[in-house]
Length: 223
Image (cartoon, rainbow, N blue to C red; front, side, top):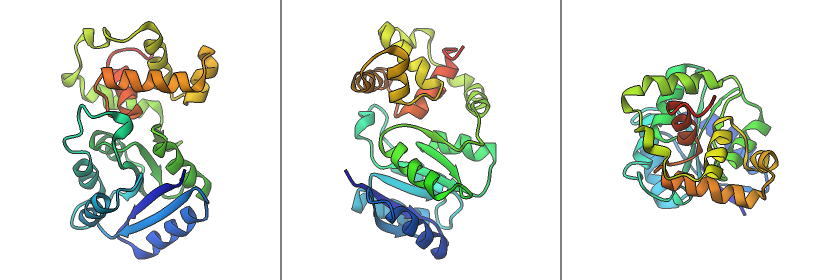
């Protein structure tokens, strides 16, 4: 299936370059470009892309605010049905941006110095419902993010509704494993893992795998 992508960046040259890189992949179609966050929100609502490649620093409305606006009032929705997924791009490798991007609802975070192959793969990963962080952003940042949100820590009974197998899958999701890797680890079919992930996200009222990672850290499930 073709992944429909909207690009949001305030620099036309960068937008055109990203569009050219992504369009070179036969599985990706660039359906629009926006020069600021407000335009990105408007185009996303009109064009219904699968993924928005969103710059963080833009005029009118920055990428963080635009992402939050796109995901407003989505709590409790079926994670598989939430669109668009947002892949944040920035030249700034700062912890604060990672935290804010995750909190706003972004599914992925890449630095602009990533390779063309990394960009294409990033779009494919977030479109599939997986989470993506730039290689330079370690699990330490996720752990720090979780600790900053201790005052919002869920009840110890928050995982009571999960089956033992769903708990196994959640722990492996928190380690950053893909569905295929989890399937190999647990000796399951990949589709079965996908089903377990969908069930645990729904039961825990989590938006996506990124929130599942944070949840696991907050609840001491990462070992």
